[in-house]
Length: 106
Image 1 (tube, helix red, strand yellow):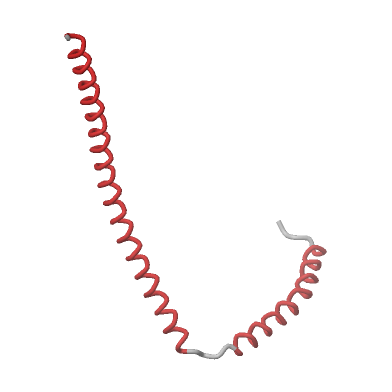
Image 2 (tube, rainbow, N blue to C red):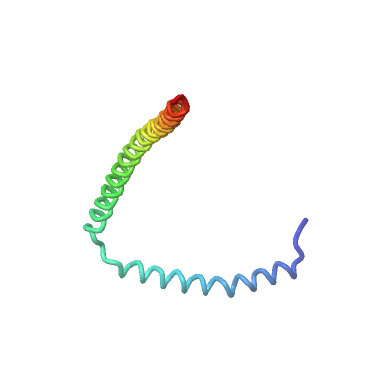
């Protein structure tokens, strides 16, 4: 289906307004980009930053693995302390029962 001739004329009219605006925008961008000095040390700086980030990732992963090991060890210690606490409570109850029996036989 072909577009009506009036619609095509309107679109061309809109483009004639947009093209000069886009052209001036491109000129300003080109002039801005041309003013940026070529700095070879900027690339080196980016490389150094990348290396630092990689090192930080390695350190973070190492610390995370160590924290997981510590967490699992602490979990085992916690279980042992709970068992020890229950054992002490049991021994205390048995001692109180033994004392009560001993006193009741006298």
